[in-house]
Image 1 (tube, rainbow, N blue to C red):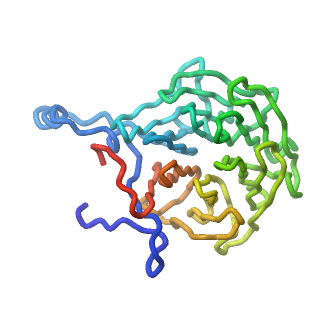
Image 2 (image 1 turned 90 degrees about the vertical axis):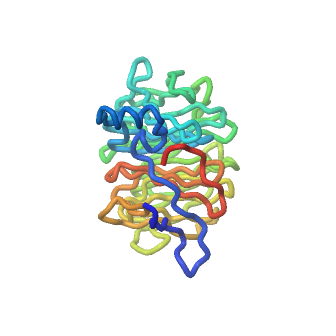
Image 3 (image 1 turned 30 degrees about the horizontal axis):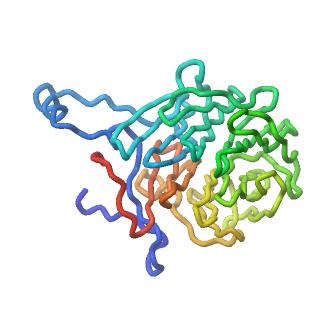
Length: 330
């Protein structure tokens, strides 16, 4: 649409920091429409083979590739924007996925996926080839979130447990050997305890942030799992939470928290002070509107990726002044 005016955040009169760049839904959002395809369309009326998201949950981006867990398709969907290609993986043994939710990418390019139904972490290379498992039923009840340390040495796994369980933990593993290093927390509301934790993110400085959903807060830990701080409370005002779900961090240490009930993402500084809000709850799938936002990631360039389960999309926002990412398809 020639007259499309992409939303910016924050809105005027404040100085804008981020602008909507694109939505990812289908393979056609990244794959180019070649001359031969155009000719076949014209000559035969052929319709493109459309593939895409059905129920996205987690999202992770690295070097122009966007990886999205899809709980209905039981796979990871990869939008390779830099190379204008699309792929789905995780639907074959031995690394077959059953209900993939949390996802993260290490600095080495390995893709770590939390499979809540299979009760394990599944590791793939950047192309989607299975590498190994971490954890399993001996450790996990409902592993929902996974994060890899900046140096790719440790893997942090959040176990939601369940309403009838006291096993609400953060597990720490060696990222390469899979050795279980420690278990952090238990069910409760005190500092370092959890109540239905969901997602997790590891910042560049080693700080680990956990969405403690049932306690309506974000908790931070050092790289060894020692509790550092908490922020947030239940409420409907900016800076509060009602149904926090996804979390990510940027290179400056700011914390991005998706709230499903609000339909937005709140951005906090490392001290837990609210900086700004992106998005709003809306009835249409227009850019910036969300009904069931779940996962979020911030890449090395500062782009924000927000996955919405209801609208079956990932919205991408780029910092003002950053050049648009290369792709021959829009």
